[in-house]
Image 1: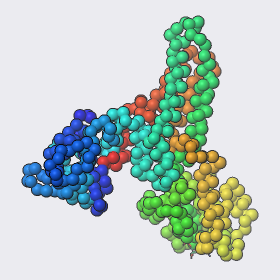
Image 2: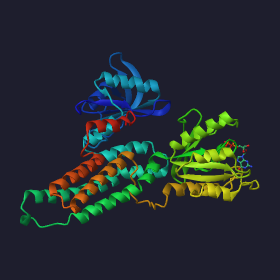
Image 3: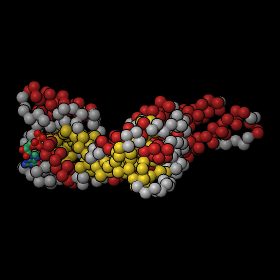
Length: 454
Ligand code: GDP
């Protein structure tokens, strides 16, 4: 599989200053020589940018003026020979050059195939490979830091260390199976197992925060019409340091925006749209908030504090159930008309914030409440290792279950071979994070989410 040469356009399709075509594999240099006519007749040297033209040898037509570089294996992204052609960044020059490259014998790369090769050739492990897309898709500078740490191997180092500790225990247990008891010194297996378990728990405890850095916290704004949902959304958008990406809503009538809330990416989902208040619309509104809440990580329930609580508010309150939520009493610039004791009785467990979307008063308190809801008492410092990928989190839960079973077995005095089964399963599962134990199907799934040319 790795004997073929792959190629793809590595920059986005559109108009830009430059566009890059990347070629990786044994034929990369030969293909470049077939297409590239250097301006000055000097040979292509490794790591030297060469100026010249891409010429179709069949028609002798000049396709574009380019800069080309040849990087020989193994010190490259894929550990294979790589050629990059920098041409003008338009779809036609890029496609024309790519077509020529393919005619010369390269195959079109699949999504993520360059990074897959970096993994298969042993330059980076699987967790590091996954972080590449997290870097490309980082929503805030803090998200980027988490992803770059993972590319640097912070997570991999920790996972390998845990796996090694399990392997050591496994080696000891296997020895007790294979040799008579008096031939090997007795070892305490329980304490190290408990220590590994404790570390896993720590990692899992902060995983939710890690996920937020990677994919954002989905925050749904609900409330009856005219309480100020859109005004609050807009106020938060204005306040946030940067609107990162507007993304289309998952339903036709929701609007989603990603904001950077003190470094945390927050996906705000506005359920506004219906403004009439007749019965049918009301029922639809309640139904829609229920749906939106089901997909939310956090809910902002907006109530108009300048008028008494209405039956429609109560209906919407009933859709909250036990979702993490913040009760936002809006229009604090107007005289308070709502019965706060009633709100407290109706929603005793949720934090409440008074704000005015109109004047911006209390907006900082709302932001703080959102941050507090996300961290929920967890202390995360810049050197806390954050699990940010749901796949890794699932694996760690599995490892935890296997370790629990192993510990139960030890406590119950089960024979060593039983415990060894659980420990082997735990070690194998950990290997799925770094890629030591991984199936082709899993690789296929992971890399299919990459962009072409990465
Ligand atoms: P939505 O239907 O819940 O999205 O509510 P809107 O954001 O469209 O606001 C409804 C009305 O309330 C508009 O006329 C806003 O100008 C007004 N409004 C929103 N927030 C405030 C506020 O904090 N104070 C005051 N006085 N009016 C507000």
